[in-house]
Image (cartoon, rainbow, N blue to C red; front, side, top):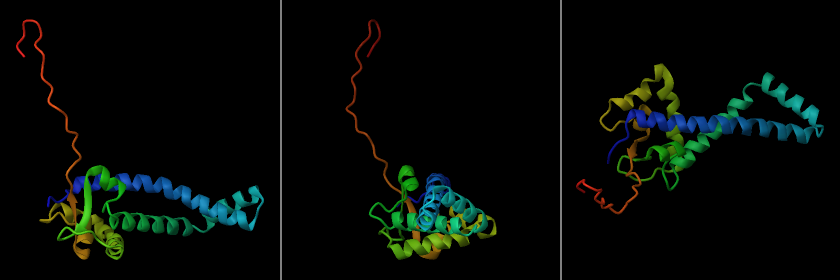
Length: 169
């Protein structure tokens, strides 16, 4: 097994984070708007209520974000592909110490233990740059590793160079 390095994992997380922030913001607004619209079918009143709710109940949007992040990371990492979209792009996957797929429960524990990795100036994440198996704190806690998978290679037939006037092939 080739373990994934710190920077490859960081880029994968940045890709996932970017996708999720855009998506969950839309989901949050849509969910609030739909819920409030059913309570008040008047469009302008519903829009006013969404704005009011977002401003005066700031815990609702983060709660939606946290739920979507959890389901995204735990769902994808316990799936057949064993990777989020960012990890797929970077050629990484999450597995047990012996290379098997993790279940949704372990993927959930791994996700929530990332909060501990982020405490104390991200030291839990930085551990991944210095441990033998490149495990961050949340990986060690859940007995997981992130590995590099073989990149998809395009096989091409070798091209024979044709001689150009006066030049060897």
